[in-house]
Length: 305
Ligand code: GLU
Image 1 (cartoon, rainbow, N blue to C red):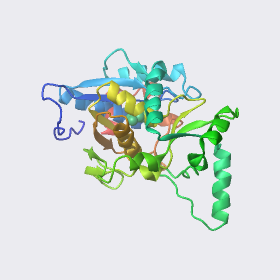
Image 2: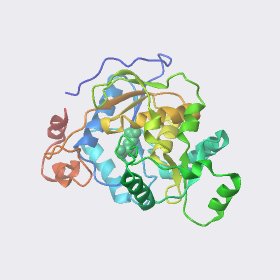
Image 3: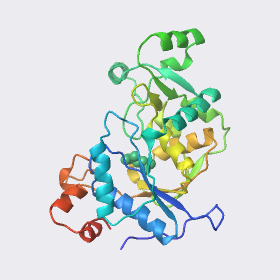
Image 4: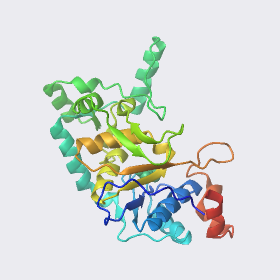
């Protein structure tokens, strides 16, 4: 049996059904952690006479493959889940993310950046060799140095015309400063990595100047997820605890773009035998592998609850 939390605090009209979604990226096979997320969303929606949507997050065309998308449908159907059709596929909605980005441009909170991963690494190594501590985001990656943030109009024009690949980034400090001193929060119905629950005060600054779009990926995860949750009327975001800290960025983007605030529920992660979070390359914990080994959907459900 799946644990069903107490009824969500509702801000919407009582007759409006809650909307849940499972939003995998088709860049590998689904594993037990995805099964937990999908089953939780599905069962919570059912328990609350709500809607259950499936969204394919395939913005990063360099890593997403049609065969993985087909496997998502097959695995979820095998688990006994049913979702609304048509399924929203992010790659078919690039215009929606482009207009959100355009709005951020108009607010003056984006800038073009050119440093490659290697260049960032070298800058961080240099700073650390000089005895400085370089700030890192909640996932452990160094924050973007951001020297293009203060470019003059002519320097920015030269950068854009220079032919080098660039990414649009959020000017985090400027974005935060638009909202005065009232803390930006979210309502956590599950729990964060150290048990945080209830009203959570965001800390988007911890992420630095996040990427919003790149030449090879026209929208970032952060931007497309908030646009889609709003466009699809998602009221409850139920997902793994690995995305708990990312919620700070999502709440900031929702505020900048004037989007509604969903309720959040971050669930536990399923760890592999080595104690680490499962990854899509863990073939042995893939849903398809269980199916191929003759296990039943009930047995797989029993492993995750
Ligand atoms: N597409 C994301 C992933 O596969 C999940 C997005 C979300 O639930 O917000 O990890």
